[in-house]
Length: 222
Image (cartoon, rainbow, N blue to C red):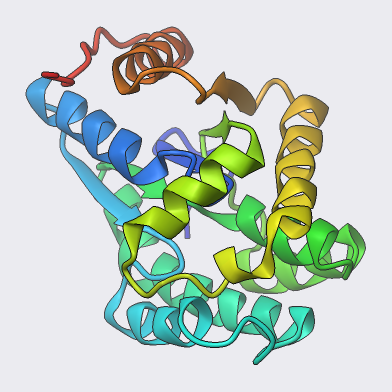
């Protein structure tokens, strides 16, 4: 299992509220790595392995009240354990880069802060499941929750259980992400996602090139 001091710990996470543009930006970033000839995988949470994808359906579909925050947290970490064991850690051990749409900060923001379980409880479960592993960099896409929520609902893909929790809940989620990012500037970067896709992509590329001494170019083609 890679740890936070390992020189192969090259996992980059793009996280943030639903509808912030994480899917688009992780795909663009992955393509930038591929274009540079870097061996890279693209993954997501909840999901990222066959077992974790099964759990994803339980979490993101259906009535918003079918699980309470603690049940959500336990399901998230069951999926995360499979994701780490079956996908992330093997890729890192093989010297590959990992780009993930969401990771543990989603649990801190959604269940810990917005869901009012408290960060202490989340961290206890996190340490049990994840240990001392941390991504190399986490980019938080920050955007007004009203804009993000409308984007997410407009997708109409059926994975809208969290979106159905409403604007007040997602306002708490946004503020939670800001709190997390601003509290640890060495590992986190807050990205203004209320810009064009190209502008957000360019900002992400600049941050990653500086952080990892790379020379990536945006893959956005308009």
